[in-house]
Structures are given as structure tokens and as C-alpha cells.
Length: 58
Image 1: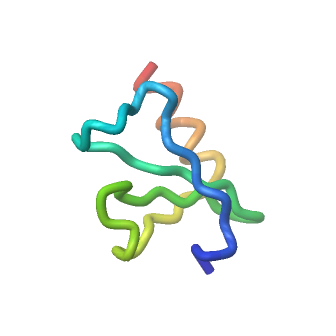
Image 2: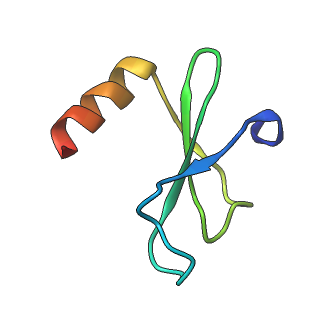
């Protein structure tokens, strides 16, 4: 499933390592994964939950 997704990393993330995540929008879910180890399972949340998360962290 995650191999079919187009993953994006924040434009604020550099290439120095650090703690970064990648996000991919699917048909029914938003998928989140660790950019340092993309072989690990991703977290899948509803678009509404992702929107609420983004609203609270801004």
C-alpha cells in the first residue's frame, strides 16, 4: 500500500538527519511515517483527524 503513495517531507526539514516525518495523502486516509526508517509501518489517520492535528500545532 505505502509503495503506491507519493510521500512528502516538510520544506522545513533539512538533510542533516534529525527527527522528520513524511506524509502521503491517500484516498481515505492520510499516512504518516518516519523519514529515517521508511520500512517501518506508517500511521494512517482520517483527513479530519489530520486537519485537526495541523490546526492545533500551528
